[in-house]
Each structure stands twice: as structure tokens, then as C-alpha cells.
Length: 211
Image (cartoon, rainbow, N blue to C red; front, side):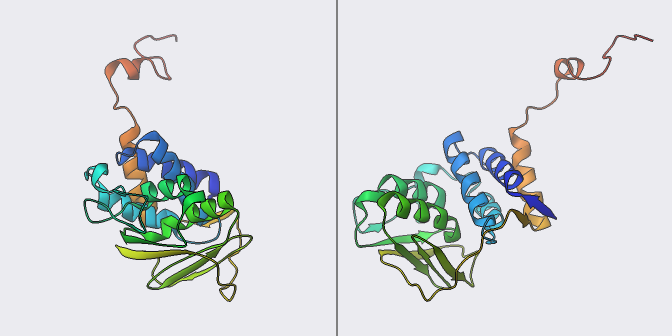
């Protein structure tokens, strides 16, 4: 089914919130899913996989423990790409020439944040993990054969690789039905359950009969 990018972002944001993300991180998750869908990369599907895998895990165990070193790690062993990506944006002007991000879950979700960091720092950045490589700067280039990597160490460094193919923008995205169902199920958690009061206060006549 074809989805607009606005629909992708809204669903992804609600699903992330339903999975326990703060509203701020849920906004970032929605942005990442939309950004990737906009260049025909399976960001929404990667996010669905991430949210299901992380569901119930304490976020303190998924964040980078230190961001002033050349190797970033999480106390729980696996870095969340959303919290890691937001931290990279905060450090965009202070990133070392090369940085290793150890065991990032669904590393495809990092790419939008690296692009944002490159824009903030006004420099070209290159990131890769086994089966994927991206050049982000004045243009976006990349290729990926392992979009749903469970946990990979990502190498991030200054400079680029213009031999990679250009990525093309689009306004709609064909979201896989399974991922759409998973995201919808998580999004349902954000809706308050029906009560007698809410049902009576909704549309319709309630207990009154106006006929």
C-alpha cells in the first residue's frame, strides 16, 4: 500500500511513543522513518523491527554511555539508533575525524541523523557497516544490502565517497503490510481505552432519544 510521507511520519511517531519512547525521541523516530522513506529506503520497516526488539528494555541501557570518546557504547550492549542519532546531532561540530559506534541496532535509522550532523557541521561525512555505505554532504549517496541488521558496529568518519550511487527523493512510500500492522499495534497503545463516560460523550445520541 502506498503511503504519503506525512502518514509515515505520524504512524512512526505514535508507534515509537506506544513503545515507550519519550515524546521528544518519538518525534525523532518519526522524522527518521519519514526521511528514509523519502529516499526509498525501508526506514519504517527498520523502525518497526527496532521497536519490537527494544520493547520493555530500559532506555538507560540503550543510550551511549560516553559521547566524548572515539568509540561509543551502551551499558546494555546494544545502542539504540534514535538516541544515538540525537546525540550525534548534539555533537555535530565536535565529532572526531573517525568514530566507532559499537553494536547499533537497525543502523539504517542512523543515516538521517548523520545527514543532519553533516548539515550542521557543514562537512561531508561517511558511514558504513557490513553491507552498507553512505556519503552525506551536499548530496546523498549510498547503497545497502543489509537494511535490517540487528546489531552492527558503524564506522563514521569525515570525508565522502562520490563513487556511491545517488539516492533519489520521492513523495510516497510502499510500506510493507507486516510493518504497517506492527506499527499500528504499537500506536494503539497511545489511545486511551473506552470508558462509559467517553462513550457517552462521543458522537451519537448516547442515552437520549431525540426522535
